[in-house]
Image 1 (cartoon, one colour):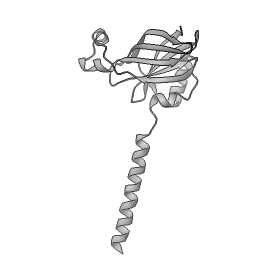
Image 2 (cartoon, one colour; image 1 turned 90 degrees about the vertical axis):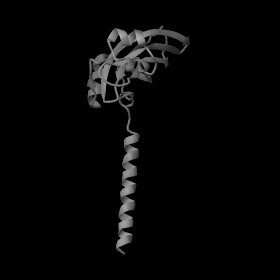
Image 3 (spheres, helix red, strand yellow; image 1 turned 45 degrees about the vertical axis):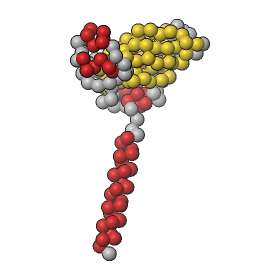
Image 4 (cartoon, helix red, strand yellow; image 1 turned 135 degrees about the vertical axis):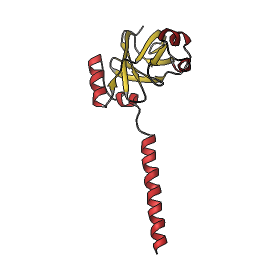
Length: 160
């Protein structure tokens, strides 16, 4: 009888561990947390980020190198995003305050590494290329997100 009880307890422990592991694995990323908000300006980005427990960091930086019209509703973005103190960056793209996509920086930019004085190991994770739904004349804004719940405000441009 005692061994059946121990088997049941062990089974319940395994189920609990699996359950909480799955919850941890599917937790939303900082970019996914902010994607639910409408953020037409820097003040609203900061307010939404504060509500989600994110902190602004001057270490998250980036640039849009080009924004070219792909078709009537899509713009192709190219640029770089860097976290001067830590890890890979996710770029959240907002159009007229609404999230339209996010992309992880994951391409080489040796020129940025040199200009910012980053370690050479950072070179493979700076480039981003992405297609975003953006009608002509709409305001496109970037927000840079780190994996550890920090964010940085990126540039704002008018969609070509």
